[in-house]
Length: 261
Image (cartoon, rainbow, N blue to C red; front, top):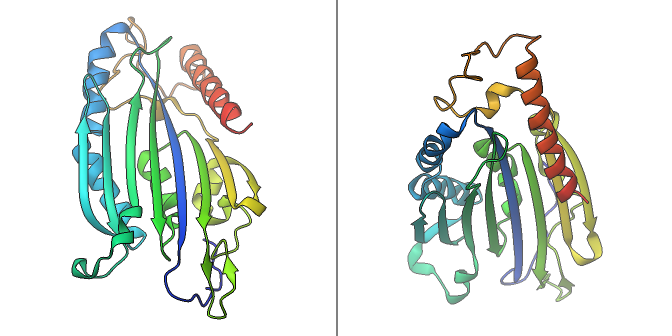
């Protein structure tokens, strides 16, 4: 993770750092009968309670305290959770501006899978003011979601001053967002960085390099690959396995090419 020298700022760091991630997970379903099971599995894995616990861990990782939680589950699947956070050590010391820091997540399960492929998307937004930065949780979010494709935007707004009164429109030097990813994440994903540094706007897209069918089957959801009960996914010469993996790879490429251009 990139480290930088901290600026000796004067008073409150009046900068808002906004990190937005769209995380895509591609799941393969084998036949029409798995649709209801898929809905149930999505609700089990990504319900509001699970997402709430996940966001609390993110808040703690960036040094934020949770002030308030709002959550909602949807029918047939999907959920939303919003956390109001502060960076103060004690709740009794809170002041008015702290309501500008929040973390939220919305999930978008595909309602009707096409050709056996169901794309699940989660959008996460971390908006922090003050000195805490959301960039330190990039690896955790990507790993926790086990994302296949990731679309990341980061923008810094506002200004602050140093002890001499000079204005600053960012409190750290950023070359690209991939500098904040660890070695493991960089090894697993193809990465494209872009930025408009003068405007403090940064974008990064990632795509998982290796496509393995087992990683795209939800546990206990699709026991059979065909009606003939071909279940040996380890067969290196399996035409069925290779065909499905190619199909999944094309889905990932389409998503990745769309978000990286």
